[in-house]
Image 1 (cartoon, helix red, strand yellow):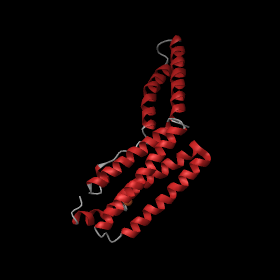
Image 2: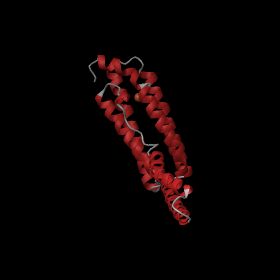
Image 3: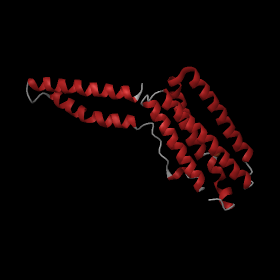
Length: 188
Ligand SMILES: [Fe+2]
């Protein structure tokens, strides 16, 4: 269910609870159910904001790979992934969804090339294994695009989760392994 529908459900729920509170107070201001429902009414916006922000990724300093340009790339990728997730969550239409996926994929390719060039120029010993990780991701992205062509919007839920998990795990795992090598070569 997209956030647009969730927002409608929350609004309807708030309206319903308000009516029940009002009816409850008609029998007296000491109606415990009405007071309990007021407490619930206060909690609903908080619960909604918790759920709404659940999928938004934030770059943290602990994600740093020790190379400024690559950190900036990773931050940009997270921003593009958030844009893609927002397009899905708010059901912003096929065109915006497709465009945000395209931008994310294009920047991923650009970033992989840049990262591989830095590793290659500095003689990074695990370059081939790292390139293989990128290649697996590129293949997966092709699958994602095909799936989107076939089933459209419904493909996004799985795609979003996969990309979010992959990106954070890759930055924190495989990418961080080159930090000491690149830094020792003066690349920071
Ligand atoms: Fe990488």
